[in-house]
Length: 229
Image (cartoon, rainbow, N blue to C red; front, side, top):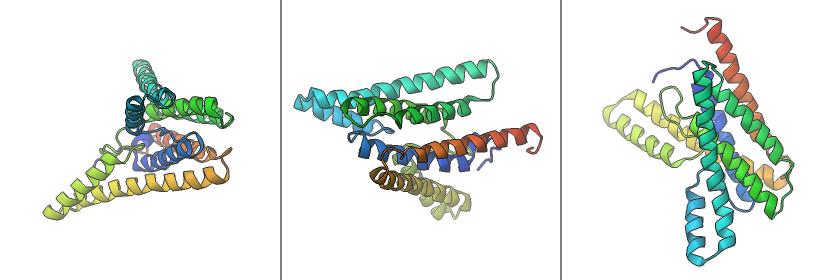
């Protein structure tokens, strides 16, 4: 596995973002009307079921985060394109700042039907930005907001590593399993904290995003100082 000195591509960053990803899904599901913020597959399936049942109200509830997710990806691509054009090494940190700002806004939105839809849309929006901006870590494609692909790759690498006695592949498989476990950990923490303190639960992922921002920035300064070859 190739080691990338950039903080935005280290496994440490993947760990922080994965825990926050599980936390956000638990928050929107527990406190904002049973909608998933991260992976839109669940919302799309629920949208199809609602359409078959003629439930326009539920269709709208599921469609809003899907649309917001789409715009989040577009904004992430626009930010990346413009910053790369200007040779500004701030793409992923810019996404983190947007995520922090949006979550601080969501924390102050009331918990009722209208504001739940707004909150879900905003969180789906920033999750899409994160999914687009943070795709690879140390040479591997770890998903910080969904677990299906990570679990599949964990089994593939472990199976291949055991068959070929390749310790590097086994280590990669274990890392993928760890990412899956961390997503579950984030979901557990998000559920427990949201149930106990729904108004301030989002301080958890905000704190993790701040740590990620600090970590990435510190690594960037070390690169500038010549500490990495």
